[in-house]
Length: 176
Ligand SMILES: Cc1cc2nc3c(=O)[nH]c(=O)nc-3n(C[C@H](O)[C@H](O)[C@H](O)COP(=O)(O)O)c2cc1C
Image 1 (tube, rainbow, N blue to C red):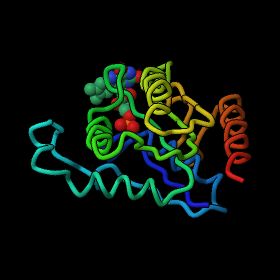
Image 2 (cartoon, rainbow, N blue to C red):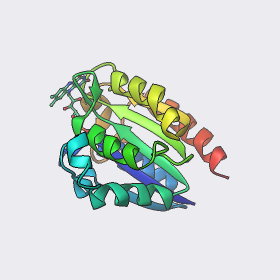
Image 3 (tube, helix red, strand yellow):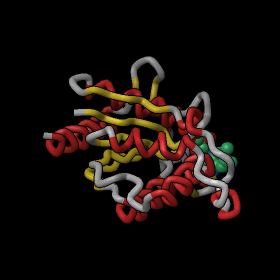
């Protein structure tokens, strides 16, 4: 199985990327591509710019999804929304095909330093991604990242780790 993984953030110290990397440790039997949104930077979308054509990065992002069997992604939250960086990528891609996620199964994650764990971004993603071709299998939000996650060891809170592992197990069942 080919897994595509990414964080919905362009921060070089992204905590969502750390969460994705931790989750990927449970998928070592799979062929994993961890993509960096920075490698797909595009101009800020506008219908005027679109008239000049699509950035090659939008095609490359869609190609990466096309080549995968399933997606593991973690959404960062800015002002109770998805980040502008991810939304811009998404907007460009959606103009090439509305089925951005191309019927791929998805393990959808989020985290933030706050107690809601990026829950607003999670809810937006949960409510919108299926309309754009995502088959969301499981979701998990990690609250208070800096209290519950250690960069060496990953999730330190046993209850949250148990919850995540159950979701990972369930997601894996759908990969067969
Ligand atoms: C402009 C801005 C707005 C933010 N708004 C929120 C917010 O609404 N909710 C939240 O939980 N965290 C918010 N944060 C904190 C982010 O969750 C935090 O910066 C986190 O590290 C972002 O994820 P990342 O490290 O994966 O980029 C905000 C941060 C920035 C820079």
